[in-house]
Length: 425
Image 1 (cartoon, rainbow, N blue to C red):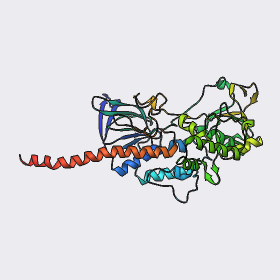
Image 2 (cartoon, rainbow, N blue to C red):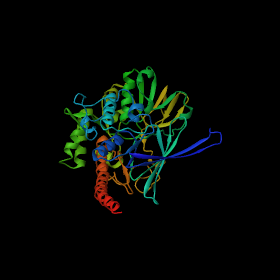
Image 3 (cartoon, rainbow, N blue to C red):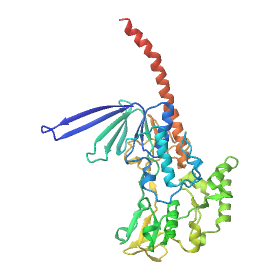
């Protein structure tokens, strides 16, 4: 799969060791061992293409294993979340739990014999025009922090949309005297019992964290500074997402949006009186244009109606033990949870400006966002969840596999002629 070359300079006393290790990868380098990276690896295995997966954490799917709350379940039915070549076990429920999904991913990696290089954080990746190869530099996470440079023909960016936490700069937050965490650190509402908790952000994470806090007898207030689409998770016993996908096969997107909004109004009611305003454009159009996912309600709205969860407008500033809102009201707050989302980290390490934009997403829209130039690929940046990542993974593996197979056949055809030439001497 790869060949290793070591260049070392040792001091006179033998204690000063400077080592620079270069690794030639006979196939693509995949950056990221989350679901997207694993999906590419599995599809490449089927094509017979060797590869190396680099992962900065010490496990696969570190977002799921280390940065998600305990009660989390998949928001979509399992058939829309399975990776290529291996479905979920039939025994799993329609909406698998966090633990079940992690077990599935670990089984997936074992089944396809995917063994990432853990604790290797990519510092930079650039295309060397002179040699026509990618050079990927990593730093180890151990005490010695070894540096390695991988050299390869193909680079697959699989770090995804949620690589880094977004922490907004809110006036006065640094002077707030209570506990402040990002939702990536939140596990359970058990330690917040009896507290007044401000949840900043009303997306799926913010709503579910607020629900969990309320279930643990905390007093959550959720900040909703802009409009948000909230849909029932199921309509007439079927997944809302599944129903939308089915309708889009027959009618235009704008009409599907109208139908979804009717059912939301019919089943959930008018939420404006509780401080929740809908955007001017429909949920599917908003997702396609801006990547903003609608909230799928799993119980938070009932808590909002009962007053167990309060909805408040945007924040003006924090003070020592509370917050002032943009409408002038003040709240006493014990803790703050920032459910403010994540962002791509691609611009921080990929030295390329043609395929990816400054926000770390491919400039080319779906369904062509998976392939750049000079052997550069992207998986899991379509804002279409795990189904989108699977689509990318299959395309990438087929594209690389085609070249790999053609070159393998060519080598087999030329090898006998080479041997005959040698035999004539």
